[in-house]
Length: 101
Image 1 (cartoon, one colour):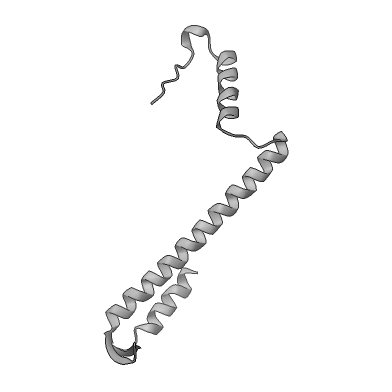
Image 2 (cartoon, one colour; image 1 turned 180 degrees about the vertical axis):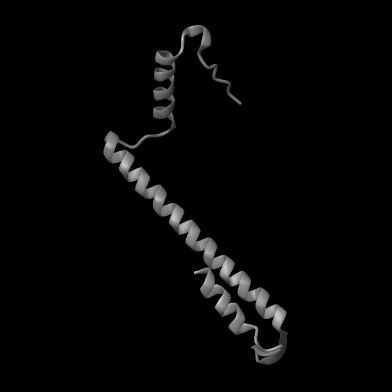
């Protein structure tokens, strides 16, 4: 994907000056402006792909956790789980103290 972005960047910046039509008028655009806009477009595309990938992974993990446990887990369930296991792991003198903000 990155290699294709570099090829597109090189293709778009071969000419030192490019004519563009904005609202019916011809506008002269420098190659550095074309390079910058192309880089911004590729950065947005990469960000979108990363966002979609992370959402997919999160949905997959949520689905697997729900299938393993048999229910959706929320913050209260996790808090109850940690309190129970902290009681079994630590002696009362060494138990973690929960500090609320």
